[in-house]
Image (cartoon, rainbow, N blue to C red; front, side):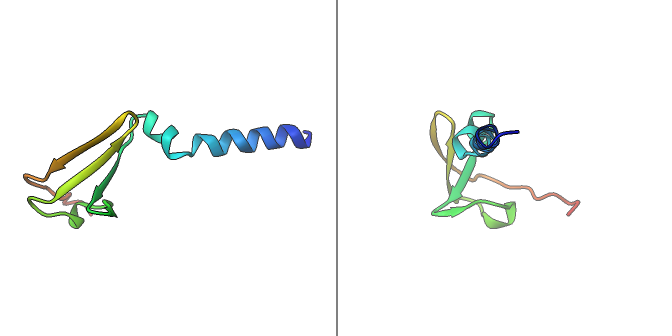
Length: 71
């Protein structure tokens, strides 16, 4: 395998990990204020959330939450 082919494969792999590419597959990124939301433990009722989607952003308010019992 030549250097150019290795480079193209590396670029393709890197591109597939870009945030925009990930969002285009149906995932979203949610923030509480300026912090990335990683867990239900990080939010409380009435918190304001900002969610990034592939085609825009939405803002929402937490009306309730439920944490998993299996952790």
